[in-house]
Length: 136
Image (cartoon, rainbow, N blue to C red; front, side, top):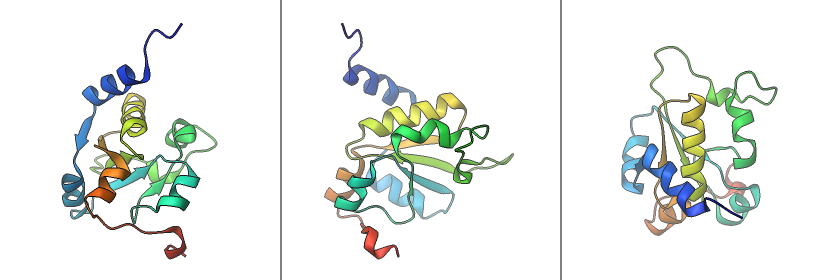
């Protein structure tokens, strides 16, 4: 029997990580020390588009890509002493990204946050979207 449902997990994660609105993320992107992390699946990016400059890190590989001791480590997650780069995670609706940001924070990646409402909120706000065909 399930003891803790997904809603409770998302609520607990959201209470422990910083959450930004679309407007706040757009403003933070202007200062250049932010890295957006898109944890959606590849099919979602292909179908719905992406945020320009976001690094795609599927939720299922996140822990392996963050850990510098993992053979799957991705340099985008490298942190140098005194680094101020903030990692802002997003997914489609803000659920997976809350869990992803909490996991990254628990692993020691700092500072982290997530986008409230995810890519859906980004789209609804009329923020710019880039389709994969435009990235080539």
